[in-house]
Image (cartoon, rainbow, N blue to C red):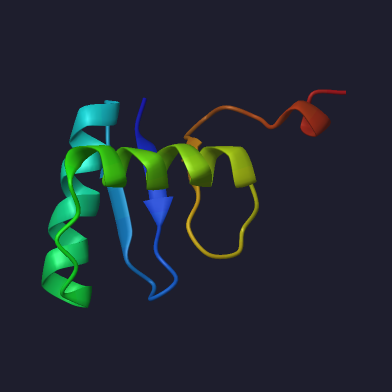
Length: 72
């Protein structure tokens, strides 16, 4: 199941596992924004996006999985 994270600039990163998503976030940060993120910094962005769980800014979600409010 792919995990997806969106950047405020419109970029979308996809990976099946967390490590792949972190790698994509690091690559995008350098190439598009000139930011060299450590593994931990990129991981923090992924976790924060998961916790925020909204459609603004960066977000992650597992495709094919509903949000708790959609399960009723």
